[in-house]
Image 1 (tube, helix red, strand yellow):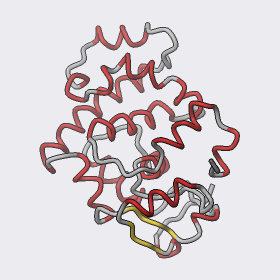
Image 2 (image 1 turned 60 degrees about the horizontal axis):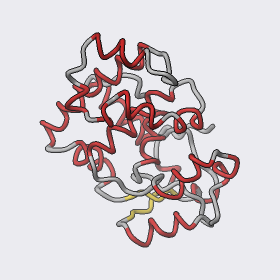
Image 3 (image 1 turned 30 degrees about the vertical axis):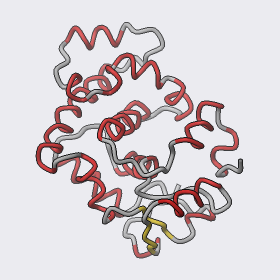
Image 4 (image 1 turned 90 degrees about the horizontal axis):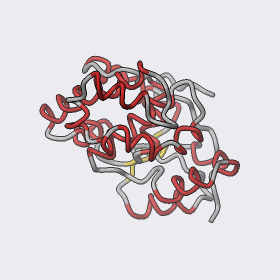
Length: 206
């Protein structure tokens, strides 16, 4: 299988994530929450480190069940901090718990988190021109808009760069390379919309 340039030097776990999950349109709230919280855990760290600790995170956070996480107490924070291999950041752990409560509120307001976040793209995967040949930003106007809205809803550790990564992961933006089989698979099997990257305000380059 061909790979996007970024993934060529990645770990086996990360390559499998690319092949099976990354960029596939996700319409599952538990999955959305897991991906968002992986982004929270990544802040300031290498993605390969985070994806290789995914099973540890799932163990610590009850498989990212936001209803259970929203009820965590100080004992749970202590349990997570003492888990072998866990990232020892109390701030991030507390952010996951806090975000689970915010996530519930969005679900109550919109019916599901998927309904909330997919509305920003009209329920279609966005194909920005030139992204498929490597002109991929670290964030843009869409991620700015969603990050600002999530902040208004109380979410923590989810800035515009983090949200752009999330939009890539859950298939709201298809940023696979044009020669990558996953780019073609997603375009062939899911509704897409083409947009000009320069018409998207606040395109921030790496």
